[in-house]
Image 1 (cartoon, one colour):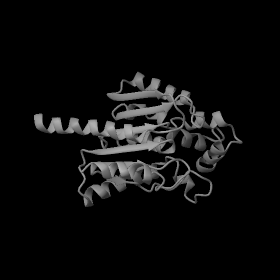
Image 2 (cartoon, helix red, strand yellow):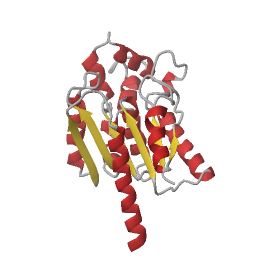
Image 3 (tube, helix red, strand yellow):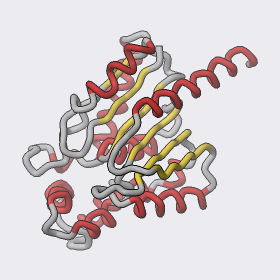
Amino acid sequence: MPLVVGLHTWSHDRFNQLDNYLPLCKERGWALLLPEFRGPNLRGNPNRDLACGSAAARQDIVDAVNFVAEHEAVDPRKLFLLGASGGGHMALLTAAFTPGLWRAVEAWCPITDLREWHAFYGPRNRYAAELEYCLGGEPGCSPEVEAEYRSRSPVNFLKELAKVNLSVHHGRHDKIVPYRITYRFAALLEEVGPERFYFDFFDGGHEADNLRSFAWFEKQLSHVRRASVTG
């Protein structure tokens, strides 16, 4: 069966998308995996330095997928990755880390550049402060911290993401993650010459349309079936 890997948002644990994704998987007879990847991106998380898109967090997701693929009846040609907000940020990073693993990847209102996002809020805002706790300080405070901001920002992995069957959506009226940051990301990715990249501005805010995501995933399955018949 197909497997949907659903990623939690910025400030929550792995169960916060359960009610959003599980009914849609049940309707289709698909499997759902909600992986643990070092917890929320908050100062109260004792593993906060390994959360927020670290290499260890990305590996956690891949390890969980490999475990499920080995022990459950899922089709490795039908792996879908889905996330919104902080989950969209993590979906893009994980897709860049393993571009050949996924049949399709959906990211809604993602954070694509942590440095720009921090600058948008300023040091006294909640999200900027949480970023500093996770990454060791504000951008530019040291070469080591600056490297963390770069290594955890999807905008710095454009060549890898150009290989992914990727769909990105952002609401024009988003007050949490400014659409202009994602717009810049999309423009830079287009310059690389992506194989299959779809970018959508919609009339909304910081939100996701899960029905639309699952409908797009279903279309990707029809491509798999046609390939198996003709090839």
